[in-house]
Length: 146
Image (tube, rainbow, N blue to C red):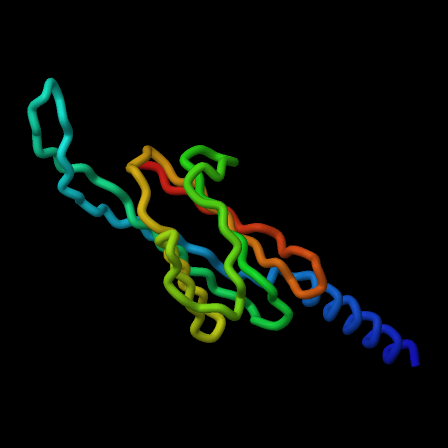
């Protein structure tokens, strides 16, 4: 009887730890340089100038996809800021949006297009899930410095 109680207590602790585990397994950011030809006016002369922007994409690998309401993404040029992007994506609505972002899901993998940004020396990103019960997952953080 003691072994059964001990086994049940161990199973309960294991299931409780599993339930509290972050549903986000992994997050990664890719940044691609995009060149845009623009015209800059200096002293009434037109000078062609090649400006570089970055296009950022986030891949999020989830442990499971149950009970998720939305995905909240933040992107900033310094740690703790959201000056480049702060957006919530409805978990079940895929698409390309008018603000230059996109969202798609294939199984447990989310592909989030973060848009086009001016070049900075660093990018700091975070992602967290808004769950259907009103709670949030722990955020995952990522940074790229050039």
